[in-house]
Image (cartoon, rainbow, N blue to C red):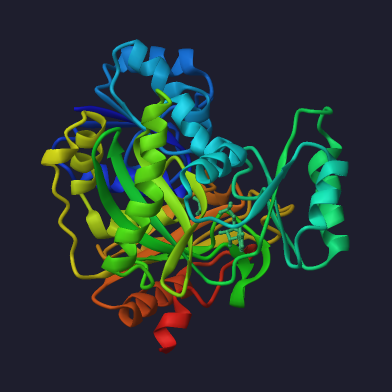
Length: 421
Ligand code: AMP
Ligand code: GLY
């Protein structure tokens, strides 16, 4: 079959790598892709928010299945549009993707269905938000309501920092056009669970732990994710059942009841406190870099699983998990998630090519005059699988030493807490 991937990150490179190993995949295209994806798929520069152009591309190439990686095309109704035009795609409709595109909406579902989550207040102006702050103690958690590429959450240690964050969120918005969630800070350990759903049935795809802060020991600003491993050690089968019964199922029921069933991957970002899961947020897609660790563990079967879900054949789908660990470490441009430079040469990747259990997935890369250069904030995710975390960590950190890129930085402590135990 002919498959089109939408996106340009490490997530999409990992999906491309997994799809290519499946004999069902005859031709693989990617819009817009990156330098790494271009080595295994045909990339086309089209705006991922231009639904008409994407449809024309699908018709022109005879695409059988479209896999959508990032949230913005989902929120832009790409699934609805392709469906209306008879093209099978993976992901929720626009009205279901709201579970990610509006934090306010998700909080309201939590209240309605008694889903465990942080206590919260909603505010739609800076003044209102400043008043709400008084109801919380530090650290203050402030969330921009809409999509913000993982950078719309501010954890403020003081009331003054919180005030600055609110000013920043509201400064460029028209009155009434923006809202924030202010919530209680949860002290626990984070984990993510990925649930496949065809609207009626569910199937857990696996778990992972992301590392959101930019620097070692969870310091620095929040990022899109600086590294991850899978499975998450703090999600036991008993906790997974609680997550499904108390959080995922009531949410999906509510979506169905509202006439907007959610199909695709529901990514539950959770805080686990004394074995009790609380919902931090939903995403309507696979995570980046969590997808990289799921993909390296699942391999070619990932295509069959996603295809079955899109075709509403989840009940007949089986996932075979190896008893192994996947780990990924992101190398980002110095300055990320703030300002950074691009166009800086990266070398050394060639020497990693012949180990199947180590893959370097590209995010922000490009080729300029035959050289691989950085072209974004998060640039590469070096990903490995092994029988245990200690071996997986060794593989990934050994691989990182051969990559030469002066302008890059990465965290040295991905998975470290567990490795030390
Ligand atoms: P989100 O985009 O909502 O997942 O938030 C990004 C990150 O901010 C999360 O992964 C957490 O590390 C942190 N965070 C968000 N909400 C809370 C909370 N209520 N308590 C503690 N940390 C939080
Ligand atoms: N790594 C977090 C995300 O994809 O949203």
